[in-house]
Every structure is written in C-alpha cells, then in structure tokens.
Image (cartoon, rainbow, N blue to C red; front, side, top):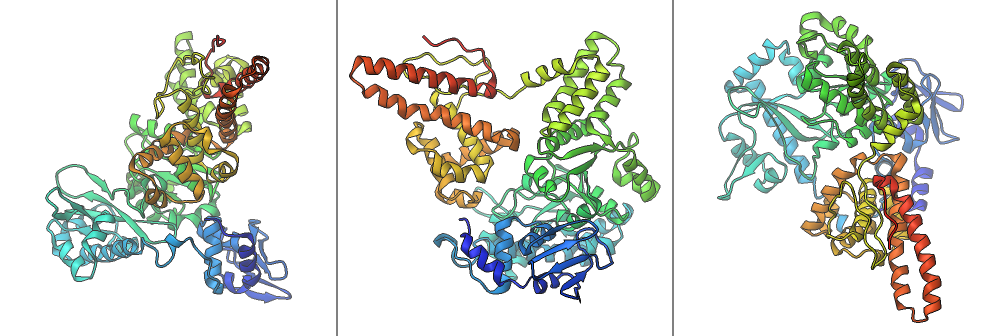
Length: 593
C-alpha cells in the first residue's frame, strides 16, 4: 500500500532534520547550519552540512545530498517507503496500514527466534566442550576467537539440545520450523537443521539475523548448508556481510564480491571492509540491484579455476544487465582470497585488486592466451564467448565501447557484431492472432501457462509486472480484466495490481498455490528483463492483449460492409502489434490467411 502524498509531506514538515541526522552523526552548529563528519565517505572532518532551512544535507567532499528520507535511504540502504516510515516513527506519526497488516509484524516471532538461536549458537562456540574442534579449526585457519566473536560466528552441536534450549527460552516449535531452524519430519517430529557445523549468521540490511550458513566440520555432505527460504530470508535477495559493508562500499565507490564466508572473514580481518558474498548461488539480478544501491562498480574475486571463471562471467553479465560496471581480479593459480591473504597478507591481495580489469577485457585475455584469435574457426568460437557479454551491457555507452573493442581485436565490423548481438535476443512470443487465423509458428516455442497462443502475451505482460512495482501500479489503471482469457493469469494479475508494492508473503496470503507457483516461474523468467526493455515489453504485450475486446466487438457486427471496414482496421492493428512483438523472439512470420 503506497503512502499518501499528504502523509509524506506531513512527516517531512514535522521532522527535525538536525535532530534526526544528529542521532547518528556528531553535529556542531556553524552559523545557521550544522556541520559533522560525513558517514558516506568516512571522513573525520566536518565536511557534511545539515541545512534546516532547506530541510537537506550536503557533503562538500563526496557530494552526497538529499532530504531526511534520502539520508535514511543512503545511510541505511532503505527503500523510500521504509525510510518514510522510519522517520515517521521517530517523530511520532502513525502511518496507517491496510487492515491485514495492523498490529504487530507477523514475522516478529521469526526474527526473535533467529536472534535467540544466534545468541545460543554463539555461546556454544565460546563455551561448549563439543566446540573444541570448531575453535581449533578457526585458529588453524588464522581466525582468532576474538574475531570470530566479533563477527558473531556460532556452533551447532551434534545432539538435540538445541530444541530443549529453545523451548526453555520460550521459542515455539512452529516458529523454529517456519524460521528454518529445525526440520519437521514426515512423522511430525522435529530435529535440528544444523548439526556439527560452524555457523555464519546472515543479516538483513537492518542488522537482524534472518538465517545461517553452516560449514560441516566432520565427514559428510553437504559441506555447506544454508537456511531454507523463509518469510524473513530470501537467498537470492541477500548478500553476506552487506549490512556491515555498505558504508565502506560507498566510501570506496566499489564493492568486492567473493565466493564464500571464509573469504569475507579473511578480507575483513585484513582490513578490506567493502566485501560481500552471495549465499552459495550464482549472483542474481536482485543481488545486483542491491549492490547498485551503493555503487556502480563491482570487482569480482572468484577462484581462477574453470568453475570459478564460469561463475565470474555469469556474475559479470548479470551486473552488466543492471548497469553496474563489472571488473575481474585474477588470483594466482591454486589460490583463493583466504589462502592468498594467509600466505602474503593484505599486500598480496591489494596487488591482485590493483590489476583488476573489465570483464570483457578479461575474457579477451583468456582467449588470446589460448590463441583463439588466430584462425577463422577459433575466431568464431571466440566471438561466441564475447557476444553474450556485449549483449548483457544495458548501458549504451558500455555496449558501444565493447563493440569497438571486439571489432578491433577480431577484425569483424561493429555493424556485423551488432547484428549478431541483436539476433541473440531471448526467445519471445508473438501476440495472439485474430480468431480464425493460424498462429505464427515459433522456431523455439515456449509453452505458456493456459495452453493457448493467447496466453503468451498474458504471460509476457505478467512477466513485466512481477519484475516491477512501477509497472504494476501502471497496469492497475491501464490494463483491463477482459484482456485476460486464462483464469490463472487473471488471478495473478488481480493479485499483483490490487497492491502493487505487496511482498511475496502478502501475495501468498491472497493467491492460490498454482498462482504462487506461476509467480515464482515468472520471477525467475523476469531476471533477463532490464529497466531498458521493460517499457517495450509492457507496451507490446498490452497492445497485443488490447486486440481481444476489439475482436469480440467485431464479431457482434451484423452489417457486411461495416464488418469489412472494421476487419481492415483490425488487420492493421494486429500487424502493428505483431511488429512490436518481434523483439520478443524475432520470428519470420507468415502473412495470415
């Protein structure tokens, strides 16, 4: 539910920007303004001015600026509605929520369960005899217990005392299950999810523990085990250590992404603070957007073996899709960040980071070393590896520079390369044909939900709505219910547009299981839609669907001459919609008969 503009203005007018920013920054009055050290670039001098007359702040060094809401967004990584609510809370203004959200946060018991569990796990690591092996393991890896305690590491024992301890501390079994801390078996009994594991707490941006990653200390599989998806934890939308690293990322104007928990620990211990890690998966679009809140440049520091390179290039392309500059730092053979720092200290790592290059340049370096630019056959193979990165670049200038660099190195003209890039577009579907006409054949058909050609445009429109709150709000006013013919699609459309900013948890409360399954499918499929193309997809899918009620009106006509005139108009409209949809898959259509 969006916050009304008049409520936002009331909060803004009521808020004392000096008092609110002064809660986290030491401000001193200088004339009519207030000065303090800037929290964004980490300076110690009083370079940031808070100007109460204008209701704004400004740093004269890093040039961060904005109003009281902007301060919370930039300082604490909040989105706009959350920042407004946080300021409102500080000034005592209650922002009404919809009825189902009134009262306490329904997820509060889960946050509480995770916090209680974290305290207990941390105490086990410090005090438990069973954790002797875990403590020795950390020391052997060069992680002193003081550092482990500072970073909140814990230990999960092998036996079941965790459940008894949680019961004694007042945590309900159902909350432990929902928070992913225990597993319910088929017979209804429960058992600890984590056993004999060193635990790394995973936090949200507000610093609350929401999940754990566990490293097995004895034989067995899997070596690493994360908490499952829960109402408070979404693996693809979280980054390990971001809650701590975000200010350093702003200060450095760059983020360093590594593969694992120990890599983060080692680098933080070495004084490198702007480091984060995905949670055991490939870097996702949501994680790229998270990083983009704080910087437009990311350096990838993954292992240099074949698997590490594949992960590096997948992550780099994902960053480029979100208009984030991707650089690659190359580790010596056989090393990872953890071992490199152990052997050579922070200086060895800094030398690697100083040599980082753009992701496309790194690909070219590898291909040159293999000699793939020497012969025609290998040159074609080399281009097949470079073109996806060019295509991933959503920034027009970056794409132009990439085209020029690859043209220079391969001897293939930019025009030809651009044609190849455009031909690589994801498979899309044409708009639904008029009733009675044969649908256009797809060279790579994607069977949509609903089993009808008409459902394809519905699927494409919903894909945009799942990817963007902004387009949900637009669709609520611009898209009609009678454009939909697949009941499942209509159910999801109504759920998305009834509350454009609804979370997945909110949607799950109002949608059927099949509709939520479709939402999950569309969310994954929407990962390839960048901001640059969302509007095109929204417009073309909408125009294709708008054709339906017009055709139904045509079918009701009885006068032959009027039907002929109307049919020509509809034919022209259909052809126009079809042309606009060519960017979905670029088929070679046959003129309908």
